[in-house]
Image (cartoon, rainbow, N blue to C red; front, top):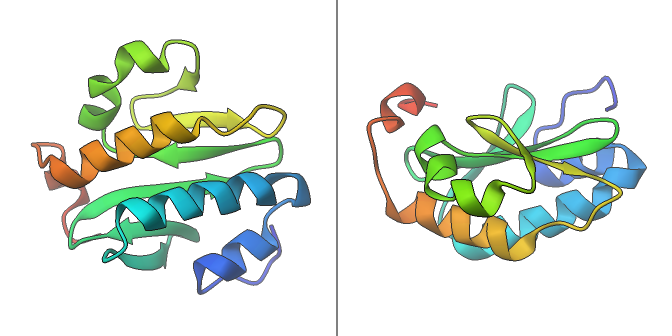
Length: 125
């Protein structure tokens, strides 16, 4: 990433590693489609979708990107996520693998429709 902090998601994607930009554009398009009315902001230097609570985020790294949601959203799709690298909050997507578009769309829709106890952590972000 460039040293200058991006102020928009478009700037964030332009500053990302060249290999990751196609993945980031795909993920961004999916999330915009799922939550077109959500506020799109940069927080902690990465893209966030907020409506008014945290919905989801994504971030770029050298060899992979991540799609970030709450633990409850990840848990709801645990079986489908079995073949992917994950943590309790994110799905890791290596740049040498295709973006799991359908899975990201389903998790994002779930996140948009379900509020849970883990929303408390993200309140105000």
